[in-house]
Every structure is written in C-alpha cells, then in structure tokens.
Amino acid sequence: MFCKHDLERLLTVDAAPAVSIFLPTHIAGRDIRQDVIRLRNLLSKAQDQLCEKHGLRRPDAEAFLKPASDLLEQNEFWRHMDRGLAIFLAKGVSAIHRVPVELPEEVVVNSRFTLRPLLPLLADDGAFMILAVTAGRARLFCATRHGIAEEDAGLPQGVAEIHAETNYENNLHSAPPARHADRTDRGGVSMVKTHNFGEDPEELRKAHLIEYLGRVGGRVRDHLKPFRGPLVLVADEEIQGHLRKDAHLQGMLEDGVVTNPDVLEIDDLHRRAYAVVRPMFESTRRTAVERFNALYGDRNTAERTTTRAEDVMVAAREGRVGVLLVAENGKVWGHFREDYHRAFPLHHETDGAIDLVEEAATETLLRGGEVHVVTKEELPSGASTAAILRF
Image (tube, rainbow, N blue to C red; front, side):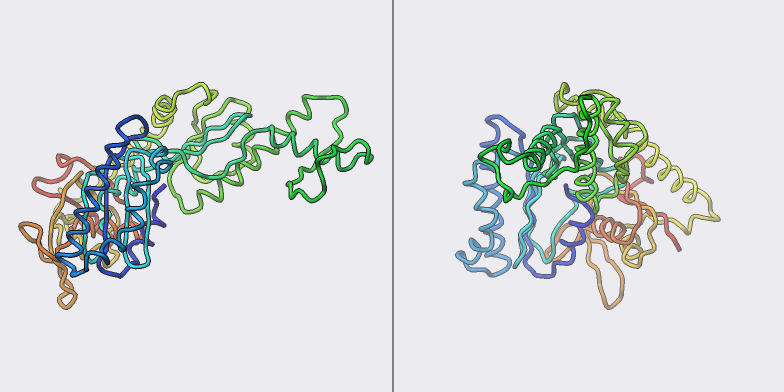
C-alpha cells in the first residue's frame, strides 16, 4: 500500500540525485521474466544518467543502484508482484512499492523523487481497502479501480489458532499426567481467556469466533492507521455482524459484500468490492467538478478558481488550494523561482525542470486538500489542472 505517509516521507528527502523507477508488472506467468528484463534495462538507463548528468563514476553509480539491482536475482520477489512496481533511490534511501495500478515504464533522475505516476493511489477517488474474512482465514487487500494487491498485515489465520491455544491452556491447567509431553510453559504462546462452556459446542464455537474476529480487527486497525480511504468488508452474514458491532474499523462502509470470500476468484472479489465504492467515488469526483464549474462560470466567484498551472502550483505551496482537478497524464514543465516566489512554464522538459501539475498535486495533498484525477474533457479547454482556492 502506497499512502500519504509514504508520500510525505519521500518528499522530505533532500539528497540529489534522486532516482525514480516505474514499470508495469505481471502478477503471474511467464511474462514475469519480461518484468526482470524491463527493470534491468531501466537500471542501465539510470546508471547512464547518473554518470553523464550527475558526474558519478561507473562503480559509484552501480553501488547507488544496488538495492534495485539486487532484485534481479530474487526469484521469490517476482513471484509476488502486482500491476506496477515503483522504486525510489537516493543516498541513504531505498523504497520499493508494489502497487495495484499499471505504471508507465520510465526512469527519472532528478534533484527530487518523481511521484506523478502514483497519484491515482493518492487521489480522493483512488485507493480503497478490502477485508475478506472467513472462519478459516483473513486477508486484507489494497485496491483501486485498476487492480488489487494483498497486504502483508500479519492477520490471524482462522479460528483454528484459537482452538489450539485453548486446548494448550486447558492442558496447562489440568493434572500433570494429562498434559501433552511435548508442550511446556515456556513456549511463548499467547493464551486465550477461556470459560467453562460445559457440553455446549455451539457456545464454544461462537466464543472462539468472536475472539478470532477481535484479533483480526485489532491487527487491521493498526495496519490502517496511515490510511484514510474506505474499507469494504467481504464476509458472510454472521462475521459481518460481529465485525461491524465490535471492531470499530476506520472507514468501513455500511454496505459490504455478504458472501463467503473464499469461493470468489481474486478478480471477482475485486469487481464486487469496487461495485460498493464506485458510486461514492464517482459522486465525490462529480461533485468536485460541478462545484468548480459553478464557481468558474460565475464572474462573482471566478476569482476563487484558477486553471493556469503556474498559478495553481504556487497557490498549492501556500496552502490555498482546497480542491484540485488533475488531468490524467497531463504535464506542464516549468521552473519555480524562490526569489520571485513564482513558477514559470516551459514549452518542453529541460534539465532541472519540474512538472508543475505534479508539484501542485503533492503540495495539495500534504496540506489537506482534495485531489481528483479527471479526464481532459472535464477541464476547461486547454487546461491540465484546475483549482478551487480556499482564499
């Protein structure tokens, strides 16, 4: 999961040169071999740029890129891919992210990291989470409309864990001859508070299920602390009831997918969960566009809007952008002059130029504004971005 916390961490890096590598990847199959070749080629380009534009010696450039080049030989790493791979390297910094969006195949070596390809994950209609739970296992996924990837959240794997711990505790508290010979008090096993349920197996089943779901909820809460998007619960009716009543999970939508997620293929799981969040995402984006158009089209309120990328970028740095609309794949190259506190657009990319649209989006996100990725047709003619100003 790539979220705002990761964005903030990467933007604080001030150690040129900074290398950003993006490539589309395959989840499985023979095409994975092509992903390795793609990364090798991108690393070769990055090495050339480090030497030619930033004056590094070839051995130093190789050492700089080593955290990424090490991946080329890690077969296990490539067996657990998603739709895209993003790699960020700088002095003392190495960040590798598998993401559920298809990324462009490119390498950028600049004075700071490039984050534009990841904006679909950070936009207000970008990422959402899926929690799929059965009595046998629990899984957490990060997803967008484009794809889905399982998170390594360390979730407990079924009621069987609770059964095992309960049996172990019962053995420890029974008479010594009844204990298992191969178990001791020093195993470091987390004990479950047990009760005497007599001969009622249904009460015991419910108690173990509730204990298990409580642990799932706790782990999910910890894992999602930096995440502010919606969460879709996929589970049967009984598990839905317990989790909604007791887990208090941030962002969980009232509507979920009521089914056994273990019977769904991963694509079907994604499709059904996205159907839950899609109306909310579309409504939020549509409301933002309609609000901009209403202000932009009224001469009494037009001053609260702007579509000039250079003005949007400066306003975003000042914390004045409340809502930002960004065209898919739209870029505006330019320079920012600290002495004038102004941005100057360019006709094409040059050394040291920055993407004013990307800069505006990241600054808006960092200052609590909304960012929505829209089509070019939803913006005023010729614009790559449009903003509603707070003041």
